[in-house]
Image 1 (tube, rainbow, N blue to C red):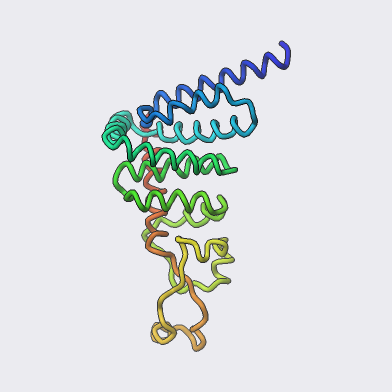
Image 2: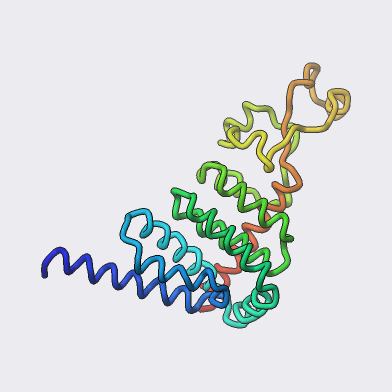
Length: 224
């Protein structure tokens, strides 16, 4: 078979896979999602294909939840149509801006947590912005935490050892508010007034939402 024909068949198969992901998605009722297949059909650049693949990964991850939950999610999306349209627009814009396909799965986990009420609208949108702004490996290192046991009194060197230093100043890691006197009362040596850092309240929310979505998908896969 000619090379051009093989590529043509491959592209056709990818388009079918994308259409199936859209049709099965909890977001299939949101008009902008349906238009993604059209974008793939008319797009010819590598950028178009990469974008649609990132969207497909997001939709596939979303579809790993149980059918009854998908139906409930879909109803929730439809009932807030205008708000949902704006939110999905933001999701798609964030996905488009990323060079890492894997970030689509992070976004799916956060979205599942949002649809199930684990995080509110503002925290979900903030999670999208953080996911877009920071390096994937650094985010994954931070997400190793479960959100229930955040850290405090960490020095910059400690964060460097843990691969978290680049997140200092992000919404995930802030300056420790504890005073040097309080630190010394807690047994810290003299000179403990050096700068220390702590995970923020949003950082814990970010972790909890990610793990909630990941667990939901894992449970569905195990039961499937």
